Structure formats: C-alpha cells, structure tokens
Image 1 (cartoon, rainbow, N blue to C red):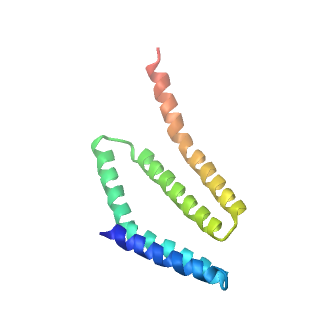
Image 2: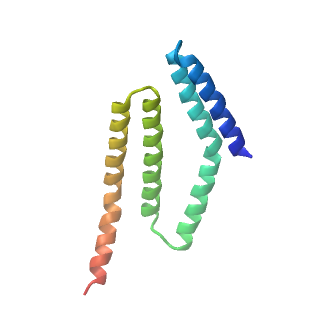
Image 3: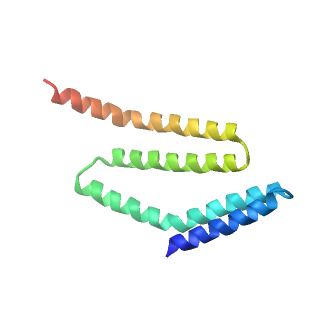
Length: 128
C-alpha cells in the first residue's frame, strides 16, 4: 500500500522538521521541501495513468485535443500553485503564498478564456 509509505514518510519528516525547527529552521524547511518532492515522485506514476485514461476518454468521445490539453494545463497550474504556496507557508511567508495562489488563479483564468468563448459560441448557435 503506497499510502502507508507516503504517510510514513510524511510523519517521519514532520517529526524531524518539528524537532529541528527551534535550533536549525533552515534544515527544517529543507526537510519539508524534500519530503514534498519525494511524495510527488511517489504519485507521479499514478498521475500519468490518470492522464492516459482521460486522454483515451477524450478520444473516444471526440473532444478537440486543444480543449483537453488546456484542461490538463489548468489542473497542473492548480496543483503546482498549491504546492508552491504550501512551501511558502511552511517557511512562514504567508504573503508570498497568497501571491503564488493569485498568480495561479490569474493563469487559470487566462487559459480558460478560449474554452469559455467556445462554450458561449455554442450557446449562441443553439439559441434561435
């Protein structure tokens, strides 16, 4: 069970980070970042499987690949922004974390404009 390994790594890293936070806060932050990367490496294979399944589904229902790739980019931006914001929060930088989240939201909004225009165009075609 991979989740047991992931939680185990997380708990061990948390204990180490808490113990070192008082005397060596820079090492505590590095433990947090490395742990996040290790966990991400654990789940990347599952993520690639999900992308393959969604790609096959999109091909079967004949969705334009441009829209599908845009949706995947939006999901990627959301996860990366969240990861970056959490690292900033771990370092005690709430302001920077908020800016990372804002940038992620703006990039998502910019990427979603073509999809929104396509939906609006479809609605206008359907209306009498």
